[in-house]
Length: 345
Ligand code: IPM
Ligand code: MN
Image 1 (cartoon, helix red, strand yellow):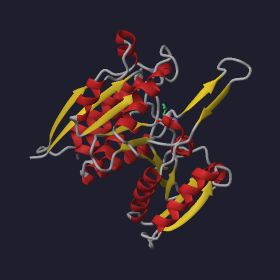
Image 2 (spheres, rainbow, N blue to C red):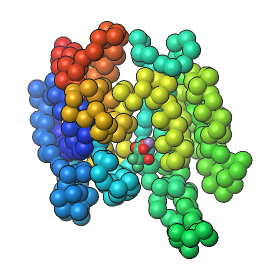
Image 3 (cartoon, protein in one colour):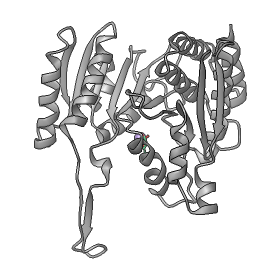
């Protein structure tokens, strides 16, 4: 019989609230014969204040025993900036080799966008997750003086670029429009730009059905606002991907519905699924957070584990719920309940 061994990390702030709803919907959508086992982990600000730890070696070993990880949000104003980001989130992405950071953007019917008209938006961003300027390769001299020099080196390996570009081509190939856009800045970033462009063009030869395109990252931010319909699949580096996916979320319904997957396609280590939004301490504990992004992340998790039909049911449920919602204000729990009812049908 089938089983899912899931690590659950609610984290800080609204993470607790949205993850509870994500689990509710997961339980409702899974067929009877699938045995779901969950183990909750207490990472985040509380644990950090109590123990000074963000993620120990023993934690990592324990997380490895799971098929996937569901994460709410980690972060709190009481913890110095960067501690949990680097000590927890980025550490896990690197240790578990989450090189495909998958972030879909789809403007669903009835969902408000700040863009004019109701443009067609349906693309996915494949953001590289283990390299670029995120590796911590850099340093500072004469620190704190007027003569301080700081470097933050962007690391790009042929191996790392090729595997994520190949993944993006495969995803483009599987979509109706079969179009892949490389987003970079190869007019300025000569070395990394060359590597990305070269690898992209090489791998393209293996995917003759995929239409390819290249756009500089600054121009891409314009098109994301003026002509988002031109995008189908985007592949880009870690930092560019971070920035453009926030913009992508903003134009396609906001971070209340933006889902993401930190994926290790080889399944050597568990992949981690999380809403793009943060812990939102300003509204935490008030039942105001929209759990839809987390529920959609559960959908990505199910698809990754091979539960395609269930993933599709989740997407249909969120879509129908958003279309019906209108101006009605509902609590986190009410939205979770409504989605659980829909996916169980
Ligand atoms: C994200 C976040 C993280 C990132 C931060 C919190 C380290 O912004 O998941 O997009 O930059 O990747
Ligand atoms: Mn980000």
